[in-house]
Image (cartoon, rainbow, N blue to C red; front, side, top):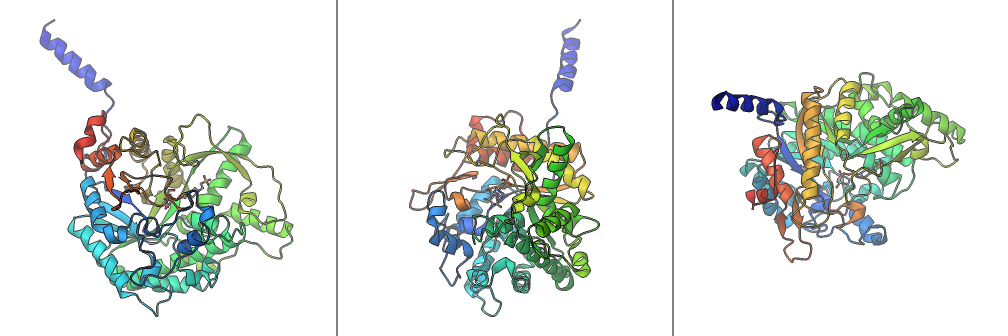
Length: 498
Ligand code: GBH
């Protein structure tokens, strides 16, 4: 056989044997995210009002892992130009950030507008647009004005009107500059962890206040969406909400565990997802039934889960242009004991046991294991449960130890992107965009500065809070620019963006 034939044979076999390179659409948008309380600092400067997270971290340093607060954080209020430069370096399409309600409306109420606050966000948005980066704006990423909390915060139905006032002000001021809006970030987290647990405002009233919060947040979200449709649809923007979903996998193949896992999905994602995304609207049936039953059993005269009027069900149903999805990890679910104590509890209502498999690779967050296949399952479940809505991945990421050679983060991103690719191209899930959390290390709520999620490292000891690109920044930048997951990414690529 001639050398030529051998060569052709070799080339053909090689082409077939090689795993095809995984690429996304030419225009598929990649971006990075942050949130105002975690980055901005300047907590009481230029007319900003106090938020519940300012109050909580000031009053309860003992509850924060490293006893720190976010008074300065990454000082993005002053260093936003550096941040935009770094986003630009990555070559991504958009930057997702949030606006501090209390910087624009210091008391939370519409009668007192802080012009300096509006000016600041105009500057930030203009800086992004000048750099060719689209702003994706979250209206509420957990930092409620303290004065509204003094009225009961999200447990008081009156707050809904005040949120809509705030949202209208944002559309009026930034509407022509912003194409994608998220009303809320992770209502389940801030309602349950905030009103039922140890996040601000720290009410610790699980199974009661968290449900009240969720009820009002759903109404506030939908009223904002309908207000947008009535008053601002000429802006041709997209309005959605960011919900979180941990993939909940049955621990065994038993029917009990399958059922427990689905119940847990409904209590976590479904709590907000079902009223907004489903055909029939309203809370998931299993939440309604179980909480009604448990409430009566505990001696209440009515359910701890409030009810919507038929008009509210209709208003909330389909109140979205796209679904924002925050996904980080996976947990195993088994059937719970079925015991209900007299004390209300969201966990008891859900009635399952969650665990993590010891063999799953760990990260620096106790709740995050590296389980990439859970991403694909999450997306497929959303597709099948809610008729394939358009999904914008608003957060995905993990914290690892400090240092620029973050090979573990590169591996996490690569594996999760491959899983995302399968969800899109093998399962037909409609995914519009992907966002890595986070642009840089920042204040991780109750974990303070101890958890680092950044593509850029922040040196908290340096006087100017120096940001430095990690290896993962170079990796992610390659993905964002080429729209393909590189096959043989190695250490030397570190120099791509440095
Ligand atoms: C997101 O929160 C936030 O949007 C963001 O601000 C934050 O920095 C980022 O993620 C990283 O943490 O026991 O499995 O039910 C995620 C907050 C923390 C809420 C874990 C749910 C319990 C998970 N989540 N928490 S589980």
